[in-house]
Length: 125
Image (cartoon, rainbow, N blue to C red; front, side, top):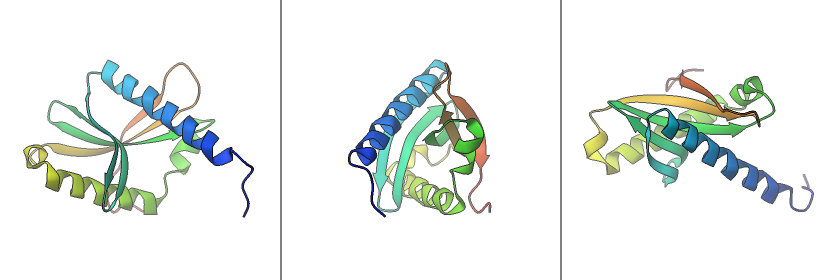
C-alpha cells in the first residue's frame, strides 16, 4: 500500500493538534496532565491525567464524528493501552492507589472535544 507523499506527516500533525486540544479540555475540566505521549515498553498512551483520586488514561482520536472516533478504538488497541497503563504505574508507585479509568476524547473540529469517560475497561471485547 502506498501513501501519498506527506499524508503520514499531515496525519501526525492533526493527531498532535487533537492531543493538544484534548489536554486543554481536560485542564479546563479540572484535570492535571501528568504525561503526554507516554511511551512504555508495552505501547504509547496519548494522555495521562489526574483529578482527585481518578487516574485517567486517555486515548485521543481526531475524526469527522464522535461515532467514527469511538469505532476507531479497536480491542487490540485498548489492550495495548491497558498494558501500557500497567507499565506506567509500575514506574510511579505513588499513583498505584488511585482509581484507574480509561477514557476516549474525540476531536471533531467542533468547538469542543467529546470526552467519553470510562469508555472501556481492560478485557472488554
